[in-house]
Structure formats: structure tokens, C-alpha cells
Length: 110
Image (tube, rainbow, N blue to C red; front, side):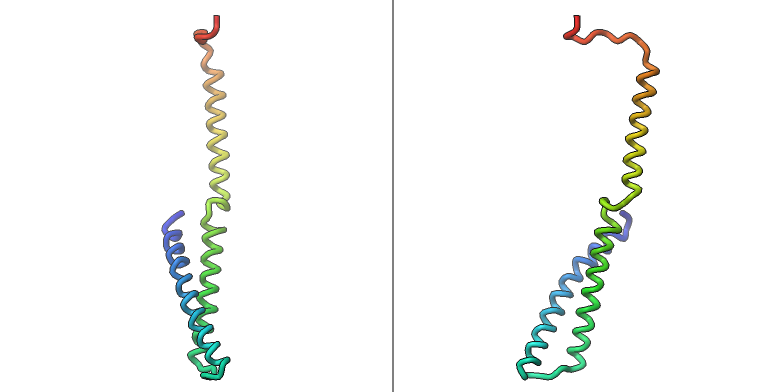
């Protein structure tokens, strides 16, 4: 997986708290503005832009973790497993043909 997976997982985990905190702040400030206790300020705009940016980051890192770093979607792992299975089968076939000595009877055979 490399060193990028734990870093991406850490960013993804911490970004959820940033999304939650910004979402609460934006909703509270929007509600206050809607009920007449304030107007839309540059701070509200910055909070909104930050919320959208962190949410996009969360989505992109999550998609990368799922599709890019997940073992389900790593093609070379499937190829490695097929190659290993083929090697094991090939080795069994070679050993089966090579071993022509008579085998002793099994304990239940007479």
C-alpha cells in the first residue's frame, strides 16, 4: 500500500471533523441571518467556501482510498494470485510426473 495510504486515511479521518464543524457553523450563521439577527458577511462567504472545499477534499480522498488504494480494485494483486496458483499447480504437476517410485499401500488398503 505504501506510505501514502496511512497519510490519506489520516487526512480523511480528520477532514470529517472539519466538515462537521464547518457545517454546524454555516448552518447556525445562515439560520441567524435568515431569522433577521444578521446579514450575509464576508466571513459567511469564507465559511461557505471552506465547507465546500473541505467536503470536496473529503470526497476525493475517500474515493482514492476506496478505488485507488483498496485491495478490491488493485489489478496486479489478482494477477499475482493467478500467477501463484499457476506456479503451485505447475510444481505439483512436475513433482507428480517426476515421482515414479511405487507408493506403499495406505493403511486401509489390502
